Each structure stands twice: as C-alpha cells, then as structure tokens.
Image 1 (tube, one colour):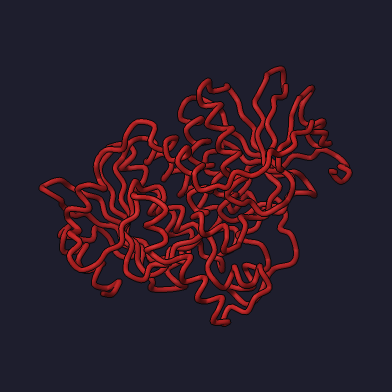
Image 2: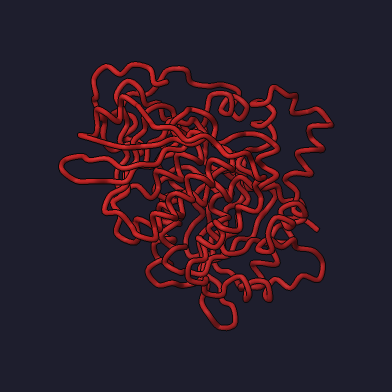
Length: 413
C-alpha cells in the first residue's frame, strides 16, 4: 500500500475534478458521492514538505467559508508539514485567518472528513482535527511536532535508531487508531466510499464539547494543583479592578475595563503548553460557554506547545484544537473574544487562541511572536532569527492588530 494509491482511490471514488490551477501545494476541486456534490481540497507534497504558505491559506480559508455558509460536505486530503516556516510571520498570520475559517465551518455543522498522506504535522494536524473523522494512510505520521523538532527540543540525535523507533511507534496509524474510534487506518479491503458516507454524516450538536470530555480520559489523575491569587503588573495596568487565580499556569478570573466587566483566561508562565494545561484552559472556556460572557480576554505568554514524545502519545494536536474550539464556540454565541500577548507566542498554541479572537494585542517591549521557537526553526531550516520583529511587522503579517503600551513593567513572579 502507498499513499499515492490512497490518493488515487480517493480521486476515483469521488470522481474528483479540479476547479482551478494548483496553488503551491493546494488543489481545490469537487467530486460526487451518491449523487451529492462534495468539495475536495488536496494538500500534496510538491514543495517544502507540503507546507502551507500565505497563498495556500488564503485559498483554503475561502473554501471553509463557503462550506460554512452552505453546510456542504468537505473532504480534505492532507500530506503536509504544517505552516511554511520559511515564510515566517506571513505564514503564521495566514494560518490564523485560515484556522478561524476552519473553526467556523466545523462549528457551523459542515460535514468535514480528512484523508491523510505520509505527513501531518503542526498546523496540518490541527486542520485534520477539524474533521469529524480521519482516514490514515499505511505510513501516516501525525503529530504537533515532527521527529526532528522533538529531538532538537530534547537534546537528542534525530538519527539515533532508538529515538526513531520510539517516534515511529508514537506517530504510527495503529497508535492513533487506539486513541479514538474517529481514526481509521486504510488497508486492503477498506471501502473508501463507505468510510466517506460515515465520515460525512452531519455532526452531532455539541460534538466538540463531547470530544473535550473524552480527552480527559487520556490524562493521568495528577495530584491536585495549588491555586493562588494572581498579582501581575500588566493586569493592573489594563484593568480598573480585577480578580484572578492561577492553577498550573492557567489563569481564570474577571476584570473591569472601560466600565465593563469581562472574563479572563490565560496561559501565562512561559512554559510550553502540554496536554494537561491545554485541557484545563479549554475546560474553563467550555464552562463559560454554559453562560457566555459579553467579553472574554485571553492572555498568552507561552512560546509554543510541548515538543515531547510523551505528550504526542496523547495526540497533543487534539488538545490544542480543543482550546480553539472552546473559544470559537464562545465567539459564535456572542462573546467578544480578544487575545493579549504578554510575552512569547507562536506555533499551534498561538493559532488556537488567536483564530477565534476578534482582536490580538501585543504588549510593547514584551511580546515576541514567532512562527515557531528558535530551536524548532533551526531544526527545520538549519537557521534561526534572533532579533524580535517590531509591531509594524506583526500587523503587516496579520498576527497582531493592536499594540498595548503599558509603560515600564517589572518582571512577573
């Protein structure tokens, strides 16, 4: 079995016809299933490991907006390393807009299914988890971080056979199929048409919140975390008054700004976000969804997700997507969601929190937004960028909309 054979089978099953010229790694078209029109997007590995740059993100986002409006079925074929790191902030800004449209389509009830090629890393894995179900190829690798990035973050040799064996076992289709019945591995005899009929059923009401509850079973029962009051200088500068508490780097609370009360959530201790902390923030957001506040401000100081094999065994991508889905659900129900970046931000964590936000603010002289942390960029490109971009570059790339000048801020505890 090869991934080419799976893609050929998908094309034949849907009688796929492209509707436009290929844009980079993206081909957009249509097919039919049981006489019903199906939108189809193919992300293939033509250049830069199938990565998605600004142009691909713009075209794919337009398809998401279309299926959100019409609630028509969408089948995505994904063979991609994620956002195109070589494009830097432009790719990150493009992915923010793309993911906003993708969350909108999924929450609007559009049936979405994902068929996966050889690689599905980073933002591509987040796209795959907008789908209700995923069909894995025989050698698909799915993770938030690829093996080279995990090795670099852990100080390991990516060519070491023991590490490579552990990575293959972690990312493999059988391990992903064990995580959830929504994942299926393609093999001889698997009827792609039958799988598509099942995968493209209209999603159940509250499907994302149900997924959130199921994710809790993948986390160990850790000892109770201490909760403490939050005394952060930037919150004092932003709010006339506020009350917030912190548990394991996740803050929850409420503040008053411009005469109005707003809910507060955030990830603020500059640690990489693991599955447990992502689930905790998503849980707080889903609880707010029971009685949506008029306004919610999310605060972020975390460079990216945790690039570790133990986190990938839990399918970290699903936990990152869970945060975005919870915030997007609040936005869809009338909450004005904003994001304030008080320190480092980037990668999938940034995308998950920024996509549902109506406005992203960066704190002057503190915020540093980057497509990925330097060690990850170096692992992918062999080089990194040391200087922090200025706000005009953030705004031009679409990763931040406003700069907050709060005066001199001492270091937070």
